[in-house]
Length: 91
Image (cartoon, rainbow, N blue to C red; front, side, top):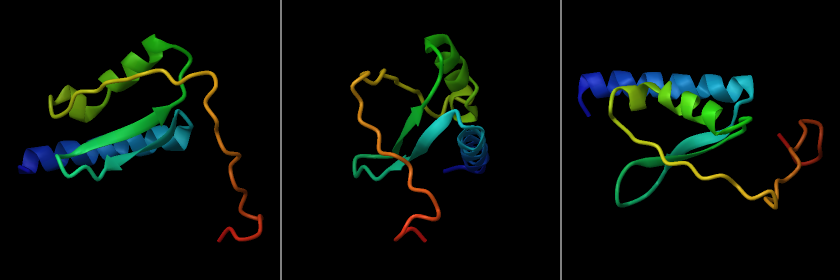
């Protein structure tokens, strides 16, 4: 990775960290695929236009270092209830 690519990827991480903090992104991160670098994310947006705008704002996409694919999740998706800090067994 070049110094320019390292800078862009740092901006990419900061961008998605901010999206997690503001609640738009549920989870985002790298996938340990032996075939090469890739990542996965789950975002909560109102529509495809908002998603496209979000993805287009990613510094890694703007710099041409990555491309994104997206697929909607089924309304039947099962989501676990978040664990609260005071629950037994949660550090």
